[in-house]
Amino acid sequence: MAIGDRLVSETAGVATLVLFTVIVTASVGIGVLFVDEGGAGIQANFSFDHRSDTSSMTVTHAEGDELRAGNLYIEGPRTNVTWAETAGWNESRMVSEGDIIQLSQQSAYGSSVSQSDTINIVYVDDSGNQTTLDTWNGSESSQF
Image (tube, rainbow, N blue to C red; front, side):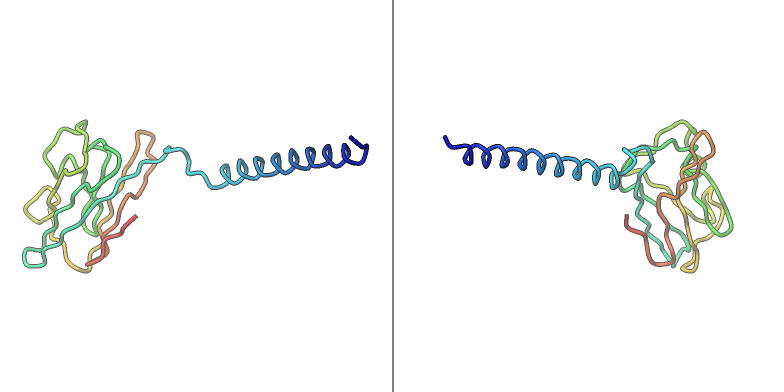
């Protein structure tokens, strides 16, 4: 093997290793920049069914994390209650997918729900940190 052939072979090997290192470093860097906080936050989606004829609404836990009913608040323009109060549950009971509550004048919510209302579903952790999980604005429900 000639010295020139050996030099080309070693240069190609070094270039390949450098390229591989750059690609791996870039991949890790992009991953660190764009990775969600590793599930540190609570995530849940809710569906809203407003009935204008009765000025009421049903709220359903559609998907996501199980949440303590006493930490899950339904905030409207005239009232603020927990899921536990509205459902008549113990505050430590977990709200899971498929659980439903009704918001109306006759329920623990204690107020009618109109098309112009905004309803927020807010989770408050034991440290008092609040996370708005979903919002209903009139006839629109947010989709996350």
